[in-house]
Amino acid sequence: MDRNDRGQPSRGERNNLIPFVENVTKIGKLGVVYILGIIIPHVLTVLVLPIFTHYLPPAQYGIVTLARQIWSPLSILIALGLLSAVASHYFRMEEARRPQLVKTVLIGLVIQMGLLCSVLSLAGIWVAEYLLPNLPLSPGLVLALWVMIVWTCFFSCLVLFGVTLTQLHERAVVSVSINLLNYLLQIILGIFAVVYLGWQGFGRQGTLLMGAIGASVFSFFVIWRFASGKFDFSLFKRILRTGLGFVPHSFSGMLAITVNAWLVNKLVSTAALGVYGIAVLFGQLIQLPLNAFGSAAYPTLAKLMSDGGTEARRQHSRLYTLLIAGISALALAVSLFAPVAIKILTAPGYHEAMRVVPILVFAWLIHGLYWVASNPVFYFGGGLWMATATISSVVVSIILNIILAPIYGLYGAAMAMVGCFFVRFVVITIVSHRLYPLPWQVGAIARAIGCAVLLELVDIWLSPQLPLIPAIVLKAVMLLAMIPLMWICGVVSTGEVAKAKDLIIARIRSSGR
Image (cartoon, rainbow, N blue to C red; front, side, top):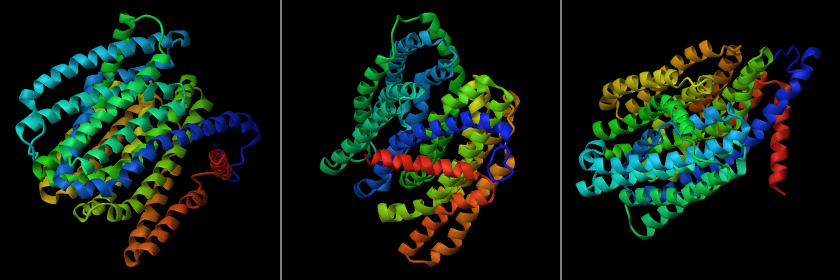
C-alpha cells in the first residue's frame, strides 16, 4: 500500500481500502477468539508445570515428551491427509454439496482410521521397542504405551476434524469450545492421576488418551450437524487422492520435530529429553497464536487467491507483511519471558531449558515465515511441492542432529531445528513465488524482524545485570516498544495502528459486559 504520509491512501485507493480494512478486521476478530481458545489451555499447561515437574522426574517427563512427538506424525499417517484435503476442497466445491462432503469424509475417516489403528496396535508387538527405545519401562509397558499412542491419534483426529470444520464456517466460538474441552480434560485428569494416584509418565500418557476420547465425542456431534446426504464413495476417493498428496508434506513436517526428540532420547538420554521437552513447549508457543490467526486468515486469503487480480494480490501481500510483523512480536515476547517462566515454574532439574529456549524461539520464528510462504502452495493443492520442502528439511535435521547432538547435547538439537526450518522456508518460498507471484514488501518484512532482534539484544545486554523484578519490567518495556519501533521504521502505518487499537478496545469492552 502506497503511503506518502504515514498511511494516508491516495484518492484513487480509498475504495480499495474499504474491503482491505474489512478483511483485516474480520481476521483480527476471529484470530482473537482462536487465540483465546488455543492460548488459554496452553497457559494452563504452563501454569501446572510446577505440579508435573515436581511429581515427574525428567526421565518420566521424557516418556510423555517422546510419546507426544511420535503421536503427532502418526496422526497424519492415520488420517491419510483427509483433513487437509477437506480444507483444500471446501471453498472450491458448490455450497449445496458441502454437507455431503462432510458426511462422506466423516464416515470414511472413522472406518479408515479404525482399520489402521487396529493394524498398528498389532504391529506394536514387533516394533514398539524400536520406536520407543531406552525408556525406563518394562517391555510390556512399552507395548501398552504404543497402543495408547496409536488410539490417542484416532480420537485426536476426530477432535481436529471438528475444529477444522468449524473454522471453515468461521464458527470461532464452537471451534474454541472443542479445543478447550480437549486440553482441559487432559490437564484435569493428568493432575488427578499424577498427584492423587501417584502415576508417572506412563499414567500421564493414559490421561491424554482419556481426554481425547471425551473431546472427540463432543466433536463428533458438532461435525454431524454440518453433515447430510449419503456417503459418496466416488467423492471420498477424490478427497482421499488429494489428501494423499498432502501426506508426504504433513508427515515429514511433523517428522522433523519427532526425529529431533527421538535422537535426543537415543543419543543423550530420556532425562535430557524431559528437559528439552520443556524448552520445546515454550519455543512452540509462537506457533499457537500463529495457528489461530492462520485459521482466521485462511478463508480471507483463499478468497483473495480465488480472485487473483492485481488489487487482490496487493492486499494479500500487505496482509502477509502484517502477519510477519505479528510473528516477530510473538517471537520477541516468548524469547523475553520464557526463561523467566521456566525459572519460576519448573523444578531445578529442568532449569537448563532456559538456555535452550532462545535458540528454539529463533527456529520457530523461521517456521512462522515458512507458514506464511506456504499458503498459496496449500491453496493450489501443491502437496508434493510442500513435501519437497519438508522432506529436504528432515534430511538436513537428521544430519545436523547426528553431528551436533552428541557434542552439544540439547543445544546441538536446538541448532539442528534452526537449520531444519531454514531449509524448509527457502524451498517453499521459491515454489510459492512460482505458483502465485506476489509483490512482497521485503523491506518492511526485514525491518519487522530487525526490530525484534534489536530489542532482544538490548534485553540480553541489560537484564542479566538486574534483579528479577526490574528485569521483568525491562522485558515488558522492550515488548511494548515493538509497535512504536515498527511504526518509526515504516513497517506499520498510523491507520493500521489506530485500527488495531480500536479493535483491542472494542474486544476488551465486549468481554467486560
